Length: 83
Image (cartoon, rainbow, N blue to C red; front, top):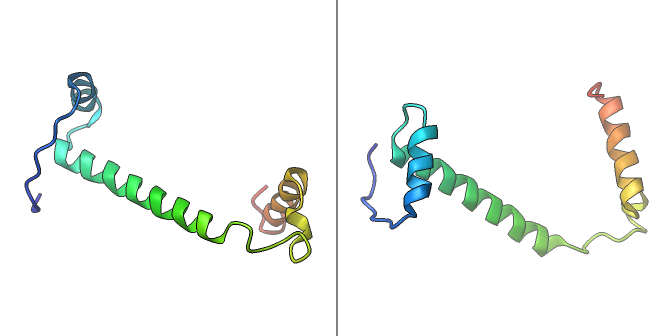
């Protein structure tokens, strides 16, 4: 895998588990995949925090309560044939 060589210090038990689970992939591939997932999750969380509260219950009454959201999602899934 081409890239930049980075030295990391990881807990020994974590490396053992990695070696048991990597299924023929290199450590670098697995770590790169995990880092991509981490960065994607952090970016999504940042976006959620950025827009949190930007839509009120007046604009989206179906988001007023947890039960309203669940009903709304169920309806969307049924309409899309994903029930």
